[in-house]
Length: 99
Image 1 (tube, helix red, strand yellow):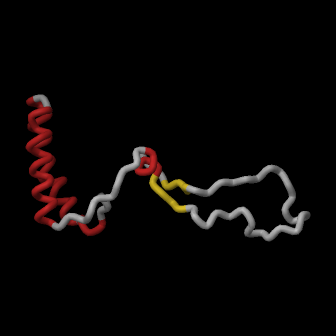
Image 2 (cartoon, one colour; image 1 turned 45 degrees about the vertical axis):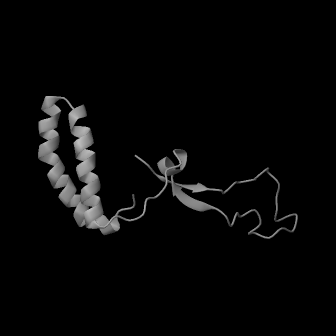
Image 3 (tube, one colour; image 1 turned 135 degrees about the vertical axis):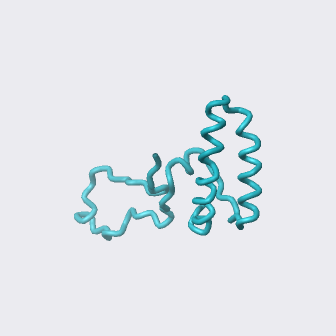
């Protein structure tokens, strides 16, 4: 499971009292901080250009062709039964997906 994390924000609280020292309340806020998915950031994954339906189907067909021989016979049957439904589901959500 992944979660959103803030990248680039560093809390430099060393125990000083900035209000007593006349500092602004916004001091120390990093304007460069961005929210990222921790798995994406950790493994330095790169977003792919959006697929249209034709490209996605071609990609999935190649994926199925490469993966199926690596599964044992029992898992191959289960995979073949479920992959079609999964592919249809993903095609319906293609515009909402970020790959």
